Amino acid sequence: MKTITGQMTVGEIAVEVPKSGDIFRAYHIDFVNRGNQSLSDAAFEHDVPIENILYEINNLGTENEDGIDIKYMDETSIVRYIQRRYHEDLKDELPVLEPYVEKMVKEKPEEAELSEVFLNFSDTVLDHTDEEDLNVFPLLESYLDQPSEDKRGALKPKLKKLKNEHKDITEFFVRMREITNDFIPAEGDSGALRLVYMRLEKLEKDSFDHIHLENNILFERIRNKVRA
Image (cartoon, rainbow, N blue to C red; front, side, top):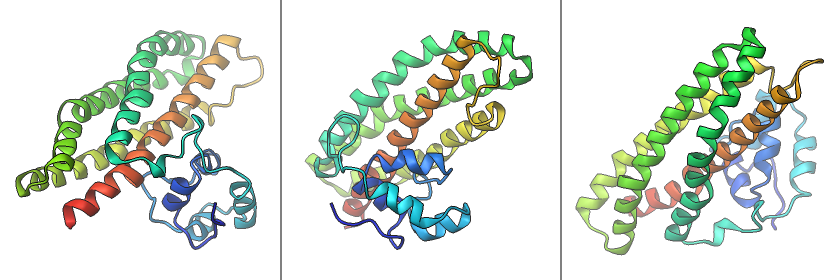
């Protein structure tokens, strides 16, 4: 693994060291939508000593939590991985988590907005992944298999639209963190509430890793191809 430096962008770093996403999330550094920001600039913006971040990241391996080094996968394999690892998991997790969130806000009515934000997130992200699975990914794979000017022209606005929607999706988690004090339970909160916070934070991690994989790896590769 090459040494990570402050001059590298946060997107490049997350590609090289996937687990660095956990460190960026802890410091509230947006590596999914602002992947072209240098680590030095991000650290300065968030008032974090860059030496601390570099030390943590340079002690990580290059594989993700599944033991896969995604940067060596081809585009079609990445699409399949996204669908299996993230799209299918979302469809399983969101309906199960919804009633727990509703019960939690009854226990903590001052966080009632959390239920509305979560439901809006759920509707938005499921519509988004359906659009990818039914329309964008098939077109993307068709273009990779048999490139044409028509497919190239159709892909460009679709990728731009998806990337804009990614910003909206991450904003839901910004608001959830504001409501829940960064998913940190208060003294005396019930075990059920703590479990909801834990699952929401895991949902955030998976969503950010998912979007990073699309924005900074898959879509970046495709954009380079359609510009060629």
